[in-house]
Image 1 (cartoon, helix red, strand yellow):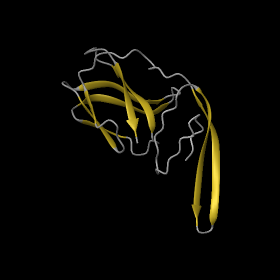
Image 2 (tube, one colour):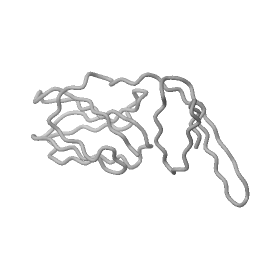
Image 3 (cartoon, rainbow, N blue to C red):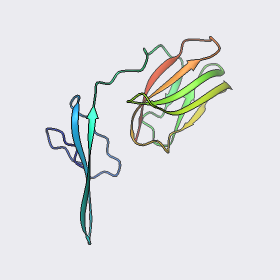
Length: 139
């Protein structure tokens, strides 16, 4: 992998994680090789400023493990009713689920989600507390 940043960072990891120095357009390339030869594929990536989709409120819940690669668990001090959303940095909902009296710990399968930075948002439906947004890293 080459990430197109000014420092020329590269990686040989299968699922690398890279933090860009700031907003901009970067050319990300993957080069693979074997005994038969070598090939590359490149794609332009536009990085913009990152902010939460909504203000982050205090949350009595626990999210673990984070970073996560298979299953994220949510543990709350009370039964939960509301909408849970996993949102990418472009604001697209990748996972949405209604929780109706769910008990802790509540599993969220993220094994099918590509590695990256996401926002987990909960919208309370019962008025038991405010909604919240938390950063989640999938690797």
